[in-house]
Image (cartoon, rainbow, N blue to C red):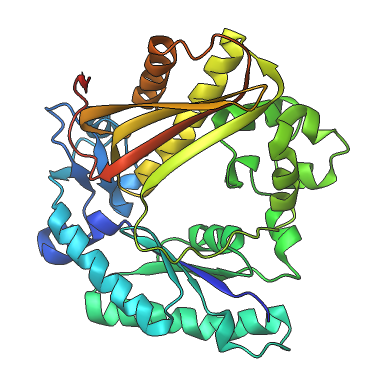
Amino acid sequence: MPRVILHVDMDAFFASIEQRDEPAYRGKPLVVGAPPDQRGVVCAASYEVRKFKVRSAMPSRTAAKLCPHAIFVRPRMDVYRAESRLIMEILHRTTSNVEKVSVDEAYLEVSDQFPGEMEPDEALQGARAIGQAIKDRIAAERGLTASIGIGTNKFLAKLGSDFQKPNGLTLITEREKVAFLRPLSVRAIHGVGPVTAESLEAHGLKTIGDLQDTSLDLHTLMGSFAAKLKERAFGIDDRPVDLSEERKSISSETTFLNDTDDRPTLRAALKELAADVADTLTKSHLGALTAQVKVRYSDFTTLTRQIRLEEPVCAANDLYRLACHLLARHKLVSKPLRLIGIGASTLVPPFAQLRLPLE
């Protein structure tokens, strides 16, 4: 049976809800988040304000400098969560195989709606009608637009939903996937954070096409991630659609090619891991009340330590600082590390500011 995966991503979800509910905001540069005269960040940006390079997670003061005539409105999380439930109900009418990634995005697997002997690309073409029907229902019933990507796996479906925003519908076939991926940045690959991207780019690997063609030993550069990296470059991804209802935690870890206690190496790894977790938190519109660090030594002894916070954290710098705090307080780098990781749990809306940790 061919795999057929859809990724449904609502367009500027929070901002679009505000524009739908308040006609005066329509067509205007709208920022959902803290006012620019207070400490805080942009939670969502309408497409009109994105033209001024305003992005989510940006300080509100910066957003106001980039677009002085932007309208700022405070987030209404109860409204967004209620809208999310209605959107998910629409998706469940199509299939019960729905993985809710965040309040505004989900993966759907519709493989069982196509004959097992059907060619993958034929099934994908058939799924185009399913994607369009979902978009039409969301527009008619909720007055909102969604972008949908269709592929044989989650990686390709996610790339497709990002490709023609807003209100896009993009199909990436098996026949075309390698060519589709070639011009994209290596940063488009799931799991490639800023530090990994910089390392790849320093070796001349700037595009996915460069990764497809390279004769370099990626294992020397990337360690245990090399095999997955090569697979992604050719559009291969075997991650299943996760049908568990709610995400309980977000984490990222790396295994070093050689055990190390070198501080600059560990700091660079922690910064990348923190950025990866923060990126997922931001995209999921979540913050974490618990931060965790994980280490594994050469004898495979594994330790985790965590800290509970009074208010949620979602910024990479804060996650990095907390991880360093845990490593130092518990003296976890007393010998070389085989693996290091950062985790975030007790996930909640992210809009409060970080305060002192609870001991």
